[in-house]
Image (cartoon, rainbow, N blue to C red; front, top):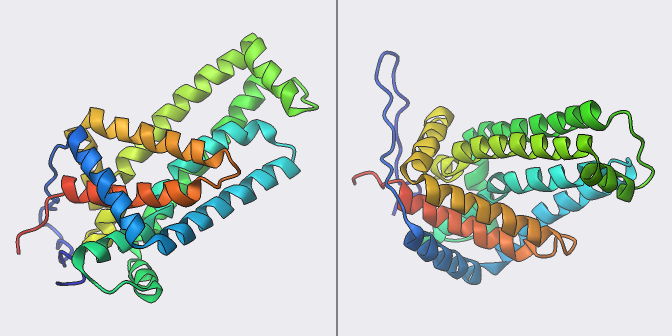
Length: 268
């Protein structure tokens, strides 16, 4: 079986861009993909734990940095934003599932080699980092607008101002509303784009448009899956990121199988 399911030539100038075919999915597809994701994790647990460990280490560094700088009010928005970059962190897991599915040899050299050969993944990663950065700056702006005149000696003082004052409640409302919009936008762009870029020779724009089309084909199921991913990652981060060692790998493998159910394989 070939290393990639499709080797497409970029469209020449003046030609019409073609997009992969997407299909609608249902709850049964998510359940099946979840079972397949658990199977892949059991088949190659060391890969999952290592990639989950990298993700957890990044979260620990962020928490320590925020604590050291006295920016405890960024804990909640950072937790939400950290969950959103999960698809980027799980790239290696997509490759593991791809190789298991195709019956290809599984090794660290093969997994990292496939990732490094696909430069388009880096551009897609920049899109994710851009959304992450915009979200954090928006939070800082909202804090300055609504809570800037207050001083917080402890994190508890900040929580009191956040939940017991009109300014704090307005900050919560606007912050969550803006965060939800950014989350939906980023999820729509990355739902299947990372697995698609890894699996086929398509450009970043095609991958993002295909991802948006996949969400549009099954909006309720897709958004439901996004909520599950965010909640599971947030809960996994609570015991000092230990749960991420298992949750991220299973979610990553499951996302690969969802991609395979959504994006129709090209004809042989």
